[in-house]
Amino acid sequence: MATSGLIDIRDVRINPQQPLEQRARSFSRQIKNPYHYKYGKYEVMVDFVGEERLEDKLISYLSKK
Image (tube, rainbow, N blue to C red; front, side, top):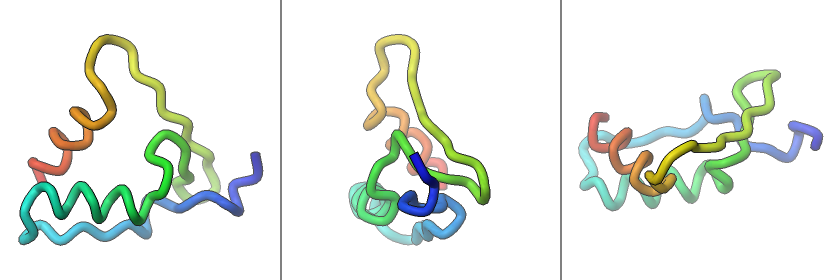
């Protein structure tokens, strides 16, 4: 897939003053597909091993911001 249609995660802006639920919605709305995005010239495809869902990983990450 060409990276031209993907969102660059460096362009995603999260307001740490917002409640966690709003940060998660903002991230999802901006990145569009959290499993497939770009970082500069690199295409990133995310896959998890184990039982944790992507939603759980995102909440963990965003709660630290």
